[in-house]
Length: 356
Image: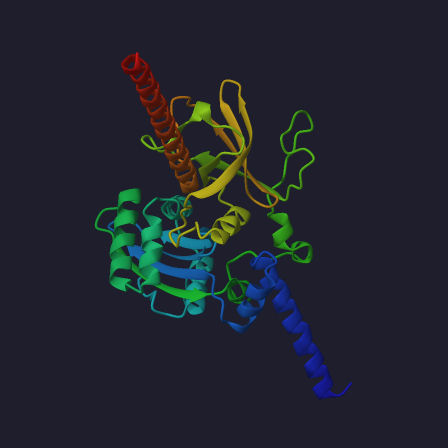
């Protein structure tokens, strides 16, 4: 084989492997995977941080997935002395990561502090204020990002006189897999299987008196009722066929994919209400509903409260008003007819009286 042919073959093999990695991280989405390959689809924020206080110093790097709003990987170091004083967050993330990795290898770090701080980082990502931080990064408001992260870290750790420096970059999961020196790499077995199949929620259908038995079920998600204390319908009055408002409570890739299809997933990682049609209703201490939201996609809802009103699809109100109007019109017509008959009878009676 000539050098040119060998080079072409190696390049093709490398591109195929990269595409396979991209498919893994996009859960089998071919379009996103190919865009990731070209660099036009960036799904991660790399957050580079350095901190210091009167008693502890350290640095960290976080890889945060924007599509599924979750922490993919983190790496941090912490020590009693200022080993990280010369670390600059303004460096390219590869160099920043390599530098704190080398500091860790050199030793002299406090493993207890390191473990505690790593736990603090994981807690920060799960705090309700964290979506605001990601939004500020999306707006590229570096000053606000530093201020907000310092506030969150101070509140969480209790470190006194905490000084924090934060920078961030947008990259792809493919770049993290190929270039990160600290993140775990995909095993050959997992890569062959593909993550899309691994992370699909398990569909459990009971065989005894299950409302989904015999149906074409592609996905079952968990949900909650949206309440409407004034205009809603009493939960005890809900029947099969009613169209109700539902909030998804599962926070997995499939649930997010469904919510996005309904334009019901915002950039802060919150679900918006969607409409479902009740196909099953049971009341045995608690209410259990199954609602269909799309072909083959069902939502299971368990509600223990029995004195609540449930938000209905707007068309429910339209139909109710139309029914009320129709009933009102029918009642008015009956009254008019009755009145006319009464007048005619009176006229007949008067005629015979006067004729007599």
